[in-house]
Length: 355
Image 1 (spheres, rainbow, N blue to C red):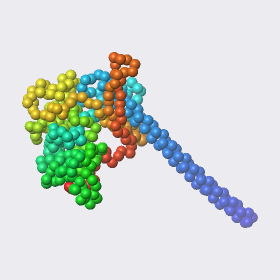
Image 2 (cartoon, rainbow, N blue to C red):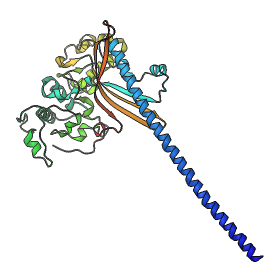
Image 3 (tube, helix red, strand yellow):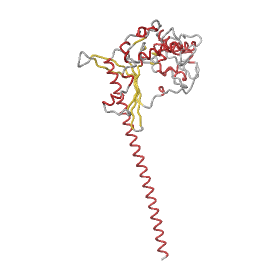
Image 4 (cartoon, rainbow, N blue to C red):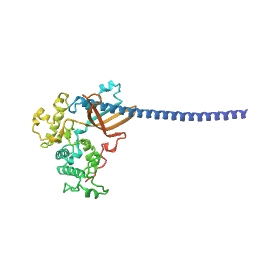
């Protein structure tokens, strides 16, 4: 009898062990199934987010195409500046939470390569550096401008005697490299130029970085209808400080109203519409009121996934192949990035190298 009870106890222990092992296997299996389900769901969400981002890009291009047909100038009151339009998304049955983004006119920025060839553009750049928010001393601003011009020009003759920035200087650095003597191919190439620091180039301590106000794409002209406030304030050569800031704010307030759009075709519109600035000295030959190059930053979401696209396009019109009275809008991609965003677009300064 005793041996029988002992046997029953052993069987019970064995059964319990088997149950425990099976339970552990089931738990592990369920965990793996759950993890696989989460991974599968994440993959689906990432794919859907990328698709939504591509949809956002198509809608942004559509917005720019329609604008090209409808208006003779480009201003901040145009539909592209308020992209995405909720009514447009609704017409395509798109959830407003699934896509988003911005469209900006590259032509409202200072054309970096033209600093080397245009005295007017160089003057605007120097005033941008000496005005707020950068507030550089005049000498430092002029030296940086000269260094940019030396970087681009095709000779080895330094423009500045106190801060020469030709090949001899760059070859004497701890990690030597050559002065390019050619145009900038990328905006962050500016970080190689003498006098440029990461703290000045990137956003730093709540102050926007210089990269926000420069472009390598636009050629020789600044769109007065879309230029950011600091660029507007740098346009007058006979104003500085608070007076230049007030000029920029007044220009901005007038150009943003849709009621004033028809008055913004000519670069000197403010002389008639804001008569107190009738005699202001601006680089008129370097101004425009139209745009053909835009930066599109769009994104798509799905669940917790988010995908982004950063693209620069050139918008042109050519005769229609189907209707001789119309024109087709054609877009040429000049730059395109998808997540992860390149370091050149990051906005935090990590170092502050001196010249």
